[in-house]
Length: 243
Image (tube, rainbow, N blue to C red; front, side, top):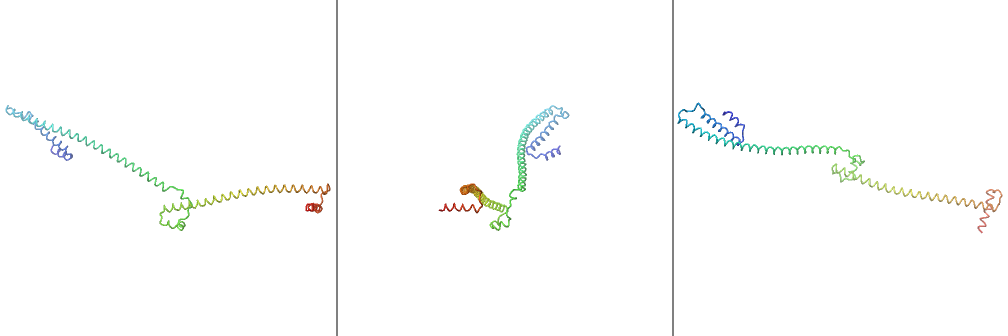
């Protein structure tokens, strides 16, 4: 029994449970003493000894009831302590579960951020396809960027390319305006030339009719003379008009 008690005592380390164990051991010993007194083989035959035995049994019963009451109280306290321990353990487990869940969420968020960073690093950004001037040429034009890091240098090169394209776009717009003005001017000149052609044709038509009328006045219905013959009457006409 002592070896079993020592082994249990080595296992139980809680102070309240050790008290329960000690009280339980003492109660067990008290029971054994009471059973020994109540053993019929040890019953005396002399009335005086029998009376002493009854007194001893009564005394041992009181001690046993006292030990049992103490054991019940300690047992009740131990049960309450166990319940409190279970409650504290459950709350601690919930806190651990919550922290574990937060840790898992942080892990998933970390993996998500890693994937997003990798996607950004491997993203084929359109600025890489821009026809930027070489770095050496840019640094020769803008030596103040020699100490800039790669990010700042790239931004400066893109801004430079943007400014150059804006200048080219402005030049293109100006050339487009000049082109439209030249097209409008050419169109106007074509219209003027077309109007001049119409006026020239009308003038030639009137001139031809005038010459025919003058010819009829001079020659009547005779055949049309040669150019030399026809020139003389025309000269006479101009001479008359001159006078």
